[in-house]
Length: 571
Image (cartoon, rainbow, N blue to C red; front, side, top):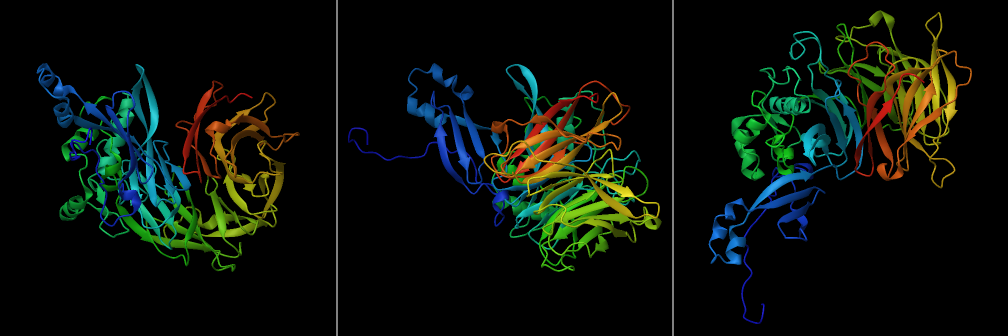
């Protein structure tokens, strides 16, 4: 080698760690690296490509060599041998189709779930770029690492003004809780561990130093510190010292407990430079949420979920779920769950004969809309005499249905938050339809088609299938009193559009207008699976000043995208 003198190549430094959990899915283990490159300038940086798509960075720390360089006799080889490489924040994300997403009811973070068998938590992280403070969305947790492909997710815990808002024995669900579904017959319920809540509070303090200390900063005693996934297991377990030692034995190096504690201790003054976020090897091993309950009842794999969260009163959250049907009424049934009690409180039959692919509760919980492969939109109405009694029974009845509402499968339905009787649907036939639910004096319901239109971006197709629709919690008004809702649309080609649609009964035109079309280079390059608007922090008196709204999208291109839109309540 090098002139024929012979020699042997020996390693002088090693970076990275496979990490993860022995026997776990790929979401909990890096599974090694498939490629690596030096920086082209001075070779003082290394980038590595993990098997699951993550990008890892290391920078050469030359501070320890400064004094050694004073020795003129120091050989270059000796300098390389003594070099120390420091791991930098890595780029992570899903590496298979992202099937569903859900915002925390307070809009603090975003949860996404994917066919890569993981559920990931994204939050705004403050950082300094070119001397300016900016916020970027980053993965700061991986609540669930599973052995089945994930299909759906719904948040069920929300903040309350009551002192018992984070009490597991209280009538309502505690904050920071979600339900997920996968290619299995079971629904799984997860609670946030104390370590995650402290991290989220620290990130919030860095974004806004005026943030008051909340229950997230000092989590309730019943919350576990963190969870772990047993070897060859599917359920995240609460921390048990002996089991954690067993898990860590195979996990490789992770963030030291003292470093992780400093980074998320709400009593410590942590700067943006000192904040230590979990690396890829830590996310699937130390940032898991404990699984607190399983919900059994479906006969086949879970397809979709939706949840109703009561804004006040004693109503417990309600979760609706559907599974893959076998072309019969029984298997196409929708199940209603009281997660607090861990029981099914209702089975809705007779509405569909094939798989229900989309569900949506109205904001007040009065209606539940469902649709799917049979192209039928069903409206289930909550029985008046059982209003609010979720603990023992919960009855929704099929009150009206629209057969052949679209010409092809209906992929998405969603109720307008500001108008619970306005429903939108999107279908493979390429049309978006707006429906008004009219209630008669005898309690009967009727569905009236208000509006029908197509997205503008069709590509080279005659019609572009609509795969996702979602109303924003926002209403604008014109000078003559006409109300308009803000509607986002996702298509099979990956394009995303935002439309203004009339939701007033007294609008003579009923025309939809395009407000914003996301540029093609910022859209997905495959089918959009879900769109969700970030909850508005305050819905007080009407204001005419511009408002910043945020919505998230996910798609089959493995991507999650978050957009901000400035709108005005004055048309």
